[in-house]
Length: 73
Image 1 (cartoon, rainbow, N blue to C red):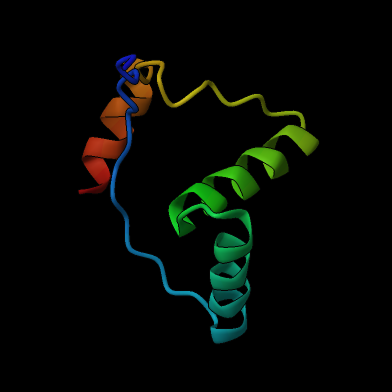
Image 2 (image 1 turned 45 degrees about the vertical axis):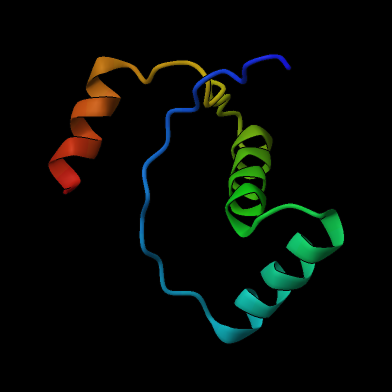
């Protein structure tokens, strides 16, 4: 079995409206994915529509982006 590349991620807590959470739950079930995957996909599609190309999660974050995330904690 091929080894999967490491994904660079951070756990974060967000507060969702009930209707949004229900939609997300249904979408995840329909797509046979977890909610995190769906949220990441939705954000990536939104970013692409607005001219922002996000690097893949398997690519280490840039130093300044990693520092910004560390400062949030």
